[in-house]
Amino acid sequence: MKDGFSGYHPVINFVYFVFVIGISMFVRHPVYLGISLITAILYHIYLKGRKALRFTGMVTVPVFLLSAIFNLLFNHEGATILAYFPDGNPLTKESILFGIAAGIMMLTVMNWFACFHEVMTSDKFIYLFGRLIPGISLVLSMILRFIPKYEIQIKKVSNAQKCIGRDVSDGNIREKAMHGMKILSIMVTWALENSVETADSMRSRGYGLRGRTSFSIYRFDARDKIMLAVISISGMAAATGVLTGQVSSLYYPVFSVNPLTAGTLVIYGAFLFLCLMPIFINLWEDKKWDYLQSRI
Image 1: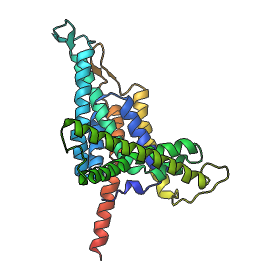
Image 2: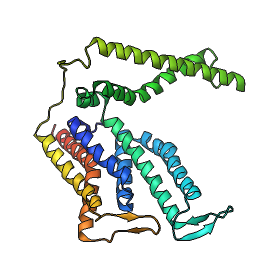
Image 3: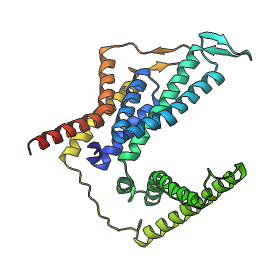
Image 4: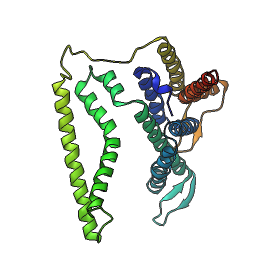
């Protein structure tokens, strides 16, 4: 499914993710966490479909559970004592709530980064930072595309090894371990060779040289200017609410959040609008496409 938000200028995509990921990482307010979590999962599902559900169920949910459990086991702060562990340390309501908040934050950020990986492709990243930090931008772009390439390559290697009876599913425990080490050795060699070839290729093209020009398909038009203004206004409104204390949360020593007022409702609405923006754009694009098809 085509993502309409990905069609905007790379600056728009990057600024958007800076706002949503930054706020999601550093703000533990329950309302912000809930809004960010739900919208991140919805956008991830729109981009990846069932793969997003598998990613959430198999990767992010276990991370959430581990974060929440470890916090209540090792963090014993808080004034509301619910019980005592066998070693005498208290189990507090505040440590449970903070662990849940930390777990939701991890789950949310992982989903946003998965969306970031789909939208901010390596060519967009190089376009944005190739002239400012050519070396670092190349390395980061390689990292962003390394995981999917690694998954594809390891499937090829595993299938090839399976054809000659040397897969991790063949033989006894010792032989399986040896086959796994062989596949790992092949993959490490492939990764090193691929990185050297990429570096030589970029060097031969004059990447990073002063005065070097490059082709770009991106143009910052009026639509992008409007979108940048909308993202900046809604993002700054959500961030300003936190910085000014209108949106605040305290977990220790007693859990408390700011009172609900008309001002905080506006701030919550601004953050909700910011997080839902890609979904709104995609729904609009889908509706427009259906209308154009009906006119044919």
